[in-house]
Image (tube, rainbow, N blue to C red; front, side):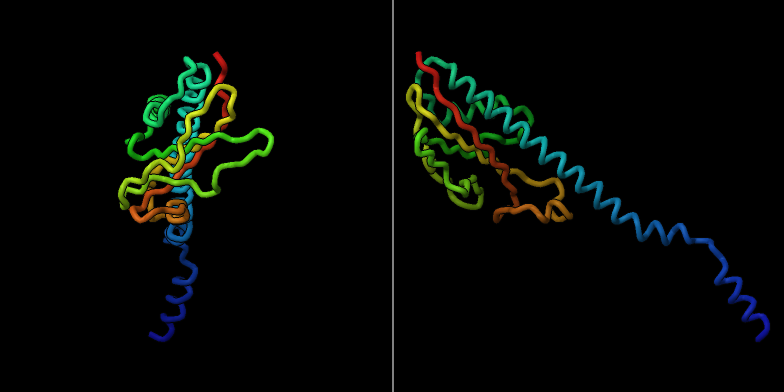
Length: 178
């Protein structure tokens, strides 16, 4: 019996069966995390691109419009119509617009107001429709639910009390004269 034990142990140590399972257990979580981060980042980029597109199309319509001052709800509706695949856009989008002096450029505040469904509805921070030939700054903030909120990229995103993350887009335009 004592002779067979060293032989058995040598064979057991030299046996390579199951070594692929160990590699799989060590490497698979890293690949899975990479795949989930890629999917999350892809959707964040898609949402941001669609918000930028909607904002650009709405601003183009304002600039080349009839010369009337558009109202908050009209601009919000234009942005949501042009940003095709954003879910529940009108309730998750917050707009801020004000004029800026060309000579002493004063930007918008560094923190954007976003809708937060855990709080009562906020009034528009500042929304001043521009006049002809006046430089206007328009900021849109969109709240969305991350696909994988507890995974690597989803947990790194800054979220509000309801677990929604924000995408902010800013543009400037001058309304054309009649």
